[in-house]
Image (cartoon, rainbow, N blue to C red; front, side, top):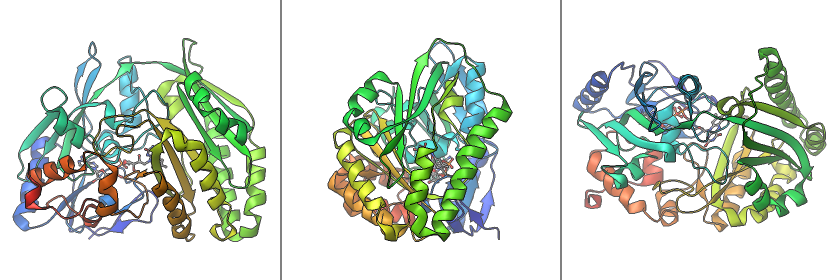
Length: 438
Ligand SMILES: Cc1cc2nc3c(=O)[nH]c(=O)nc-3n(C[C@H](O)[C@H](O)[C@H](O)COP(=O)(O)OP(=O)(O)OC[C@H]3O[C@@H](n4cnc5c(N)ncnc54)[C@H](O)[C@@H]3O)c2cc1C
């Protein structure tokens, strides 16, 4: 029996079988067969989640053969694709059609179904997560039948399925609302941290996409500011991209992480060195090539969404925690901004959100640091990224989502026997109760 591992290499399972359906019918057959044999079913996509969310000892469904573009309505900007389509490939196909996602995260290796199932987001205070850009979802349910939830026919059902954690069914296809292709002008530059925290609203107003990184023990915010532009794209040569984004950002980062692991007392000096060595750089290119970069350093991560009004105070508190010597943190914290949406399990549900992400060497004891940061996030009613580490349970999560019971009801209705369950879902959603059904 083959072992499955996530991207970071620290989540593993040995499924009873791994299936690779190539059509919707084959997907239904896998579900029916599993149910008949009394096995549970879980999809795993690109494995870029840091949690146990994709793990199973039942049937693992891989989606790499479900990667076709099914329908395109250029006028309306609606594009229907199969669930296993990888974002990087989808971006190129959309660009050929003169279309693009309105916003994306910082890598493009995830699949469309995997991204939306955990609430993947980018940055941009006026823009929403990838899940909120979804107009319809076609799923195979626990009995093998097919259900399409769309914004027109069942907005409440879609609001649950847009971030479904794989708990409602196996997604076969996703319809995305795209926008006309656009170019971004991005400037990366270091700025004083105090000034950046004091000007957060302004920086979010003047930029379409604003984010920053801060290394612990430094007072420098490494700011990334992107605006939509009519300038022609100036794509860099592959060699230049490799030198800047792969070598500099990844290999140097790896060096700092290793030094942090083996010379912990030097972590503060290294952080200051890393922050002071960053200069100003500019990139003008098609949006999808600006949003995504390459991540070769393997780390582990926690990320929380909190109300935007708490951003400056929370960042200061997280930095104070990250500087404690016992945590040996040589990674920066990352701060992003996303517009409110109506997705039931979204960290941005009904509130403009600041996301604070902390990273740690996966071979170090990351738990005390992450637990400390989580305590801070709890003070702001923080909602965890479903694909990133956290220690919450259904009991601590339920009060943070105003429409929590709607999700529980739909789960109980669509998967009463828990065919799509695993230990992670039991922890974060609780058991499926028959009394939950609406
Ligand atoms: C280097 C790196 C950078 C990242 N950057 C960002 C970022 O910028 N912003 C952000 O928000 N997140 C980011 N993430 C997190 C990542 O986007 C999410 O964890 C995402 O879910 C991963 O997608 P995936 O295709 O790898 O899905 P997986 O991790 O393989 O699966 C995620 C979940 O989706 C479910 N699933 C997958 N396919 C289906 C299907 N067809 N039907 C039902 N359920 C399904 C799985 O069962 C699982 O529960 C990053 C992660 C890494 C490792």
